[in-house]
Image 1 (cartoon, helix red, strand yellow):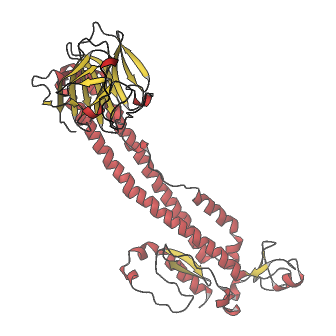
Image 2 (cartoon, rainbow, N blue to C red):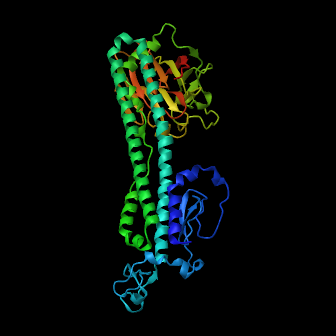
Image 3 (tube, rainbow, N blue to C red):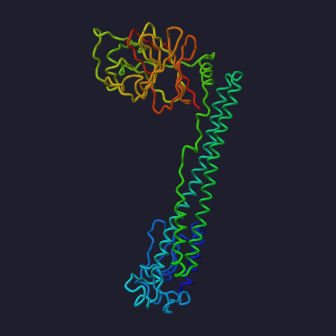
Length: 474
């Protein structure tokens, strides 16, 4: 089969790759007329024995085997060869040392004498195989980019609409309780969400446009390389090495698509301190009030420095002479006067109140169930690690403590009770005075583990007045 026919078959295969991928006839085994025919067994191209084959994406590219082709078959048609300007012979050899085409006389007694020389058709086969590898990589990259556009960006578009709608509903549900006082705040928040939604949508549009343009660029470059591969003579192909290198380098600089947080809605755009305070007051002061549930201190967590009442609702600090050694339990605090409540809280909205009585030293708050229980280090000390958030009262001073950082809180009079409101859907923890219904401190945190109500007592007694929980879901 002539070189022209083989190149024509290669062009046909290259221009119909997409058709072949969807053609049901690909399930049938190919007919093999001879070693140099074009086989259609997959979506990739490779060069074998001077011809181009289609290969499966998982199969290695076959390289030319010179021993399978006779000298007569391996030589291109005489009309394709240029003549040596010095000797007048056909330029059917390639001098690797000089990087030039040469004739047999140039090798025997000319400028290529003693140099590394190969047949032109062999050198062309190497270049073709290199181009086939590049085209395969470009085709795989094209598939990855198409998948990114079709799946990731499309999913993100849907997700941002869902997130934006959820944010709107959250804002509106809070505003409805106190609409008259929050009309301006409502408008501000909705505009902020709109801006954030528009920002994300613009990012998605930009990403889609960029990668669509990249696809077009890759397709254009690949088509150009395939055309050069199929329409160029061996001499033209080898001589255009720099042009081919430039196109390949440009295509390889495209990069890979990446999914980032910039493609998601920032939920912080819907938060408001004003709304948060009024919303908490509306819940706590509602005529029906929060529904009651049972909350009690867990015996196995109570420190030996404390005693627990029979109803598991009152903790009392023990003086040294009255302390006892309870049985060992891995959940028990053994150095700090701490205790935890059950059950754990992982969803919904929860509210509970503690009576401080005459205690001058106490801590109330929440912690992760995974908080350390043993030892006298900060890892087991409420408010001095990353796993606990507490309101602390000691020697007349009130403060919020987390990870060793204290934030002072001013109050007009000594607190008799402390209320806590934990809203997991909005990732918010409120400390408030149940007597005046005034907010003491607000915490916004992305809680990532189940939470337990926590308490520490270093003076007198502290009691759970009640546990109130609202099983709300977003």
